[in-house]
Amino acid sequence: SQTGTEGMFADLGHFNIRAVQLSFNGILFPSVALCYIGQAAYLRKFPDNVANTFYRSIPAPMFWPTFIVAILAAIIASQAMLSGAFAILSKALSLGCMPRVRVIHTSHKYEGQVYIPEVNFLMGLASIVVTVAFRTTTSIGHAYGICVVTTFAITTHLMTVVMLLIWKKHVIFIMLFYVVFGSIELIYLSSILSKFIEGGYLPICFALVVMSLMAAWHYVQVKRYWYELDHIVPTSEMTMLLEKNEVRRIPGVGLLYTELVQGIPPVFPRLIQKIPSVHSIFMFMSIKHLPISRVVPTERFIFRQVGPREHRMFRCVARYGYSDTLEEPKEFAAFLVDRLKMFIQEESAFALAQDEEESGGAAGEVSDALARPRRSTVHSEEAVQGQARVSSHSASGRMSFHTNQAVEEEKQLIDREVERGMVYLMGEANVTAEAKSSILKKVVVNHVYTFLRKNLTEGHKVLAIPKDQLLKVGITYEI
Image (cartoon, rainbow, N blue to C red; front, side, top):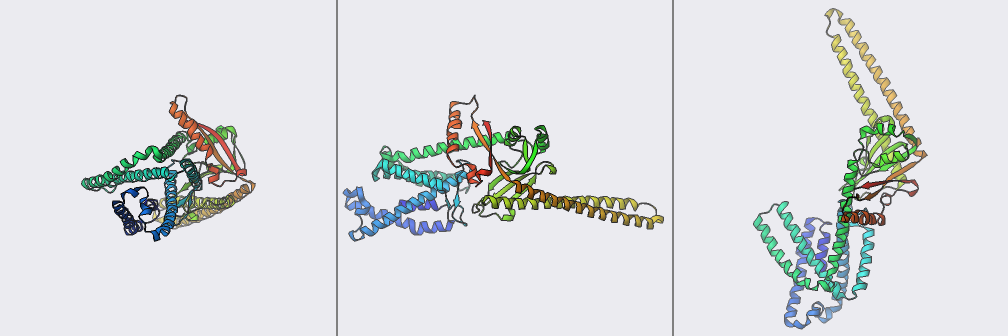
């Protein structure tokens, strides 16, 4: 019964509402009800067999088939727990409450069906440790029971909040729901808390440790993000920043990864202060994951010019759906360069269209001015207007030719720089607490956060960046 309930909790984010309703009302609830009714009837007749009610209440010929089904149900229970852990942690990852890990989506239809290799390994390791430490199923059962009943109580409280704030049900209906379900779960919880010392403390301690780590990571990440926002350099000051540090351009293409999509991240001024050089083609790259299955490849990259055009510096946002996989480095670079050249061509065509529109407006103003003199000069005016139109078209043609020539030269330049090499740059931010910070803040920032950042998956591994093309720029944030 607990297996079926856990399966329902794990599947809430995996299937649609109708499937969950049908499986719960048609299979799970009747099965659980019959199971408990049968055990209650058996205990009324044999009250001394309370220690092993389930197996003793089974008829002898059905023992082994039921035993096999129970083992399979235990396997399903473990899978349900794993699925629930993967789903919850993937949401925590999207909210910035845990370090970046590799999330594998196993379904193209349901976003909640995910697999996290690192978490799977840690869960397996924890299961072995708990089994060796507790040795008996009795203590594990106490921990299991407290975990399940506490989950029910938490769900009831959260459902009450949803009914009040989102569904906006009547207060009387909400109170009836809370009193009925809350009182039943409170009775169960109060009865099982007596086993807290006998192994029931395990899920509570485990939850406190995980929540503390998540809270510490989220706190520092938010502080770090606001620090970066407070220290960004406006895009309009790019020219002044380059001239101030006497930056020279070196061959190749540079990609600086950053979470920010506005302004210049503080790691860039740090880079040009220490090494006053920037690649001939330079991009500020951001990877964003969207809550949709797939992003059309033609819409993968969004480009924007940073600073004057002659600087050849761009901002690029790469968008991926949860079913999309990051391309291999060579494929990613080729696709990125191809879309960059297309962006340059489209921007040039747009600028040319604007120039033609402005020149057309100027020719119209000339025609209007020529139309004002006396009628005796009509023929001469028409000739002048014709010459003005011819001159305008020829100027437009020359402008279009020069623009196309400039675009082709810029494309060829990009191809040459790509052949010279592509370098990936990432900020290696060392976050420390300010000297005037409290002891608790120093522990969280200087020790807990640093431990998590150094011992879990690094960003370049998640982004599949080749190590021989990676350059890390060290920077310290005092928060």
